Length: 399
Ligand SMILES: *Cc1c(COP(=O)(O)O)cnc(C)c1O
View 1 (cartoon, rainbow, N blue to C red):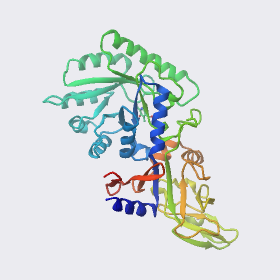
View 2: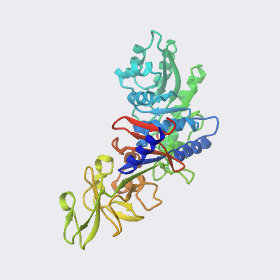
View 3: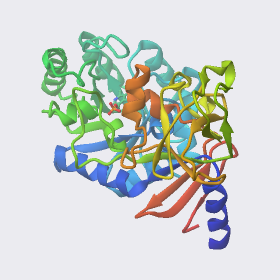
View 4: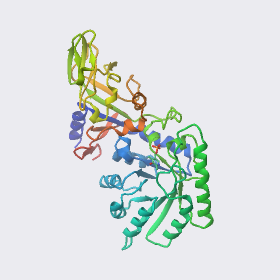
């Protein structure tokens, strides 16, 4: 089998692909666990296909590295992980799709409920031997999803009359934990604490009480809770410019491609759609098969760069759907490796620098890495797994 494995690795390496350093990811998980301490469990959030990093492999490694459970945003994402034989606890944090609740309960997927409709949906789909585990979201100020604080005791009291529903957790989500000003977070903590105190006084306190995302953990604003939900920091990325990961965290993904064609752009000639760049003198250019449909933002037109042969290769003209042209050093050859983005150690763009250039957050840039970019998973620099999301194929070295 391993011959087939390495052949596939070579095929993936010869085109545009993402490299995921699972060792770095596992290390980030361990750093987060050491920050919160042994009394606090970690939910590794792998929604949006692991923030573009691949939820199946990330999820598997997170559990190995000590995460207690995985978090996703949609029931469909949880089912995708189940189909890949992840049998750990998976929590859908966020509104469940009502008509999928039955599927979730059948596959032992933990649901969040934060609306009357979701509560009714769960109650309508349990019974007949099916048991649902739920976490209740409380809206303490984000004003997005969750029960109003004053309704929580009544809801949990009502559910406790149903033996087929277990309330395993109660939680809230912060609107501004990634900002330096602690005031909005403190206000949310106070409202949440009032709810938890009342549940405790009535003997209704669920086993898990949680608030913290990555930013709240990094700023140590998770007192009084025993579970944290971390996504962005597990991938070695900072929640914001104000709340950043320190040097213990390592970025996990890089995107590589190859020079597909090398040519010369003659002085005065334009390049790519709209000919928005014109050469002032002859220059060597390379077509690279990566474009906005792979997740490279189109706004990087004439702005971003790749790294080819250890040298910065500026983007010339428009980023196309499937290709981008860059200016390359004289020595660049067809088939040469191109670093599209990574941890910046070779001078390449990072998720943060791209986010800064196009006016968004690193979360959005990472989750844009599209399904058609095959992924190579590495440990200590050696490939251990691959995945082609588009064709549903994957391989692991120990298969
Ligand atoms: C996405 C999400 C998280 C994880 O947030 P990070 O900033 O990536 O750590 C935690 N909780 C909820 C409810 C979320 O939606």
